[in-house]
Length: 71
Image 1 (tube, rainbow, N blue to C red):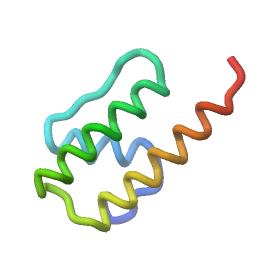
Image 2 (cartoon, one colour):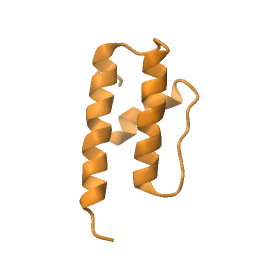
Image 3 (tube, helix red, strand yellow):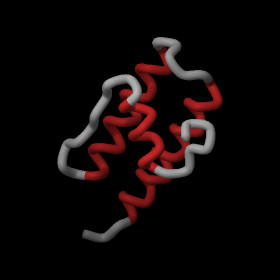
Image 4 (spheres, rainbow, N blue to C red):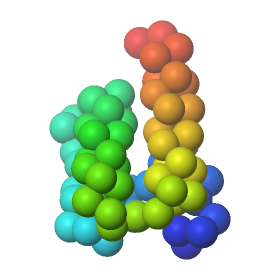
């Protein structure tokens, strides 16, 4: 699951492995908080560079998509 991260769901599952559940009620805020939490577990040495970079790319991509959605 973690090796083939391709979707936001996969990043959520990664964070859940460390007891991190993110739901703020607005998708763009969820993505921003997930990035903060991802950086925290990376700084703590809990995930390696490859997983961190893959997850970060997914979060940035999803953030861009969300910013471009007209509500």
